[in-house]
Structures are given as structure tokens and as C-alpha cells.
Image (cartoon, rainbow, N blue to C red; front, side):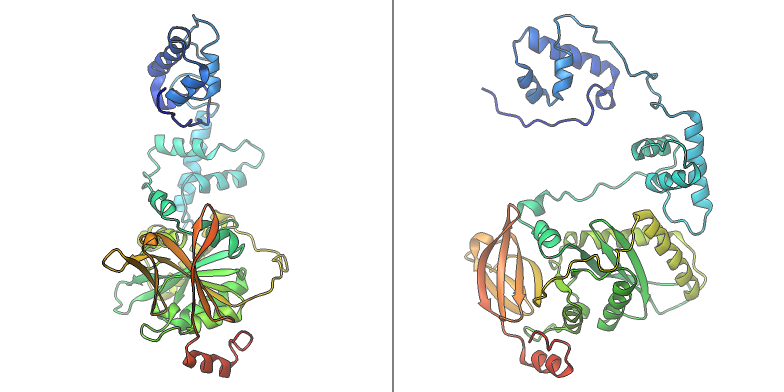
Length: 420
């Protein structure tokens, strides 16, 4: 018995010529027929070993002699199915109109499909794949960079399912965009971006005066009021958000604000941009579609075009405001979450993570794996979990008292009086 090969099911049946070409397709049909009638392989064995769709195998094993050159596509080889020269001309025209519109920032298949729906509401809309192929044939598209393979993160138990499915239904990400410089000015411009990874998706940017906790808090206030308040907010580990680089177990101003809004803070894995993939991707879009593609005459011009960009992004993602009161009411228990990767102590005998300037030791078997630490503020306990098969398993729980200065500060101001 040979090694069992997993079956990969194509999304098409006999149109394999996309990958093989017409001559190779004919050869493949004949090969399937020969394996079945001459070699005696079962249909299931052919499906596994050749990684083919079973309906394709069944079709070409009906009898020993079949016409392997048969072509029932209904349209000439090398031409698009159904879509005419008129369709190509319309797509080219929609692309040109988008490029000429100063308020347009997106020119790909999705944007053109949206424009088609507005311009030709009573006609069939070409699929995204068809529009993308036509744009490519017309030389109007740019090759897309291949994304990072997420296999390693999954293998190392990154708690993706927990973050986006168990901590809250709506998880927003926020990040400060790198400094941008305007020609003729020495002072840099700063921006903060917000996004939802899961539909209804959102992409929104603000220009802020400078970095700092105030900018993050004010940006959150505006976005929560204009769009929606999430269940969780995912942030990086910058001092603006997480607080002191020296004090231990402190509650930062941003943490206090979010908890006061009954929003759970989630801090991403340090030095691992993929753990903020949604907002990092949006920041890349900001650079490519907005900052690097436009010429700005002044800060006021930046603000004006940024509003155009935000509006275009809302239309592109199809974001719609959630209905008031549609979010379920829940009992809020103040907690803060930290995503971390377990490090080696240096001798391979012990692992560790750092949370708010405290070192938490873990068994060496968890070195290199990703974990999620939950700080329960009422119990003042830090519990470290690992996600396996979409379930959390407890690794360790340790006392984690709130810093006395934070306790006095926020109790006095009332920001966290409901929880500590």
C-alpha cells in the first residue's frame, strides 16, 4: 500500500485546462482512463493519487475508449466565457473613471464591481475573478504580493479563535501609523488607524497632533461614537497604550479608559506584526492608496483628502453602522489580555513571558508557543492559557496584584471604582 494522499477538491470539474493547458488536459483524461481500465486502480485511488475531483474521474472512466479531445465549454479556447468585448470596454471605462476621480482611491475588481452595480443596475455583474482577469489582460492591474504563510502561527498555537470568537463578538484593532513628512515642513504628521477584521469590516484613519495616550483615547472616543463600541480593542505594546516601561503591574490611562467603557484591552504579541495583521494591512493600504499616491499642498489639504479616503474605504468595505441597541448586553467583569510568545530562559530548562514588567515562568515544553494571559482585576490573578483545537487549556495561575499607585490613582479619580 502506498502512502495515503489527502484529497484536494478543485472548485471546478472539467475545466482543468486553467492549470494544465488543453494538451495536458487531454493527456490527463487518457491517463485517468488507462489507470482505471488497464492498471486496475479504483476510482477513489485515482482521486487520491492524482488529486482530482471525483466527478472528473467518473466522467473519464465510463468506458475503455472515449473521445478525450471533447470540448463542451461552448466558447472558443482562449476567450472569456460569456463576457463580450462590450464588457471589456465597460470595465476599462469604469477603471478610467475611477482613476480620474480625485475622491477615488480603489481601482481593483471590487471597486469596479461596485461601480458596475451603480452604472448598470439592470445588467448581470461579472464575477470578481472575471473582472480581475480582464484588468490583467488589459494591463490595468498590478501583481499582488503573496501574503505571509500563517501555518507557523497556527502550528505554534496562536490563539486566533479565542481572540475573535470567545473574548467578544466585535474585536477592533488600533495602531499608530509611522511618521509622515509633508514637503516644506519639518514637523512630522501622525495618524492613527482603526479596523475590524471580521465583517462588517471597517477601515478608518485619523490625523492626530502627536503620539501619546491622549491621542489614542480621543481617537477611540470619536470612533466609538461615530461607528460602534467594540467588545475588545487590540493594541500594540507601545508605552502610549500599555504604560510604564519600569513600573510593575500598572494600569495605564488607556487601559483605564477602555475598562471604563466596558471594552476589554488585548495587547498583541511584541515584535510579531502578524498578530496585528488586520491593522498592519490597513496601514499598508493607507501608504499605498493614500500617502504615497497623492500630492498634498498643506495640512488642510491632507485632512480634506483623508476624509475622501475614509469615505471611499467605507464604501469599499461595505461597512454599515450597527443598529442602536443591537449589541447584546452583558455582565462586564474587568479583565485585560496579553498575547505572548514563550521565550527560552537560556538553558532550555524553563520558559518565560513578560507581562507589565513582571516575568512569569512556564514549563520548558511551552517554549516558542503562543499563549494568552488573562489578568482578572477583581481577583488580581494572572492566568496563562494555551489554545489547542480552539479550546483553552490552563498552564498556570499566579497572584498579580494591582500596583498600589494605580489603585490609589484610579480609585481617587473614579475611573475604575466599579472594579477595584
